[in-house]
Length: 520
Ligand code: ADP
Ligand code: ZN
Ligand code: MG
Image (cartoon, rainbow, N blue to C red; front, side, top):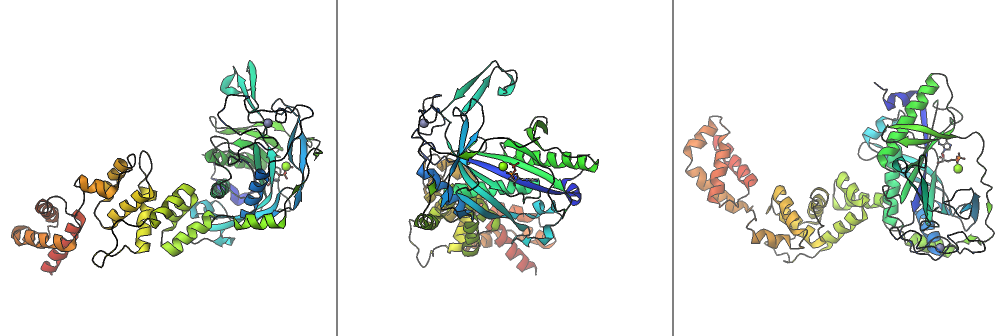
């Protein structure tokens, strides 16, 4: 039985630092040339002398890519450098025809930000010092993770190794190179090693992902590789003056892999240190099938990339005006959005957070609230109070997603109104949604056309209940004698009398009200 992470972490403090690569999928062209970005094109059809690295070809930096990085930095509390430069990072591999990657040097477009990450109570439990953190509104804690820098760089070409196992180079008969991906703009966020648990690392990636989605700079798909995470981890005694020796795991392509690889490393390093051995600084590879990390290479000395400023690219200059314009253009971020949903619209935290985290859900939610109902409010049928409606709309969006297709804002609004009026049960609403999602039909019309509307008119149902009770002396007597099971039978009677459209829950409530009053 392996030791629990939280027990290991009461002995050893983990320091985890992530490097997150984000493909700027919102852009149309590559970083240094005019080739269009296209994921699914025939190999080597979106190439030119610049991204093929032909001698003499001159690069020109993509302005939109620079702005996307600066905007991201502002959203993450970074300072935008008014002047930064591109550098050359040299290495030899066929995926980089120039033999150097264009990246940035010590000064990146964005420097020194931080994000606040909320840890739920369960996540916080793994952290012995959680009680010293700022408490979060719903029982967890808030921790601040510093961002060291965000820079802009280019992606390499894609290599496919053919003939070996799982596309690995070992055992392959040959390799193919697709330069369509060469020169794709990547944004790299480097975080300080402020994370303390594997679960926290996962929360940070979720947080960053949601922020980048709200900014619209990338589709942030871990599976498709538009968001890639390298994780560094080391262990040391709490309050030790220096961090321990770290290991790095590259290209973790799911949140689960990130978490599990870090958890494995924490255990592996703790076992070494507990046995009085040293951790060697290594790049390790997470193997999801065997659920362990294996050493790829050991860093004995500095990698020599011969970094120097690129003489072919002028400095990146960003004026105060541009920074202010970008700042003003920032959208409401998920954390702010969910706080507003809770305070202004009365949503529960869970629903608020789920909706705010996903721009598509958030815009559906807000559009549904903004829909003008078809029948205007009257004194007899007053408009549903905004907070009630918001809660029901949120409930529909979070808990009643259609199996196929999606709902239009007006449909969501209509379903919410039906639920609010108790004209539909939750279970019926699910069926109605599955029926109208693919066709776009109005749910209220569908409900009426199929005779599904449930009668929840209190007065009408009360008179049915009174009729039924008046001729059910036997059952009333049995109920008084303590046999509460007769209520089921009485509900059935009411349903029959009301033509099956009566709201059974309301019938049940009305029946009990009267029976208990009589019994008193
Ligand atoms: P390197 O020079 O090996 O690339 P950096 O200082 O550039 O290391 O940091 C790379 C990443 O590793 C950053 O995300 C940083 O937070 C993390 N990191 C650095 N030192 C440690 C450490 N001792 N333990 C865990 N993570 C670390
Ligand atoms: Zn090109
Ligand atoms: Mg580094």
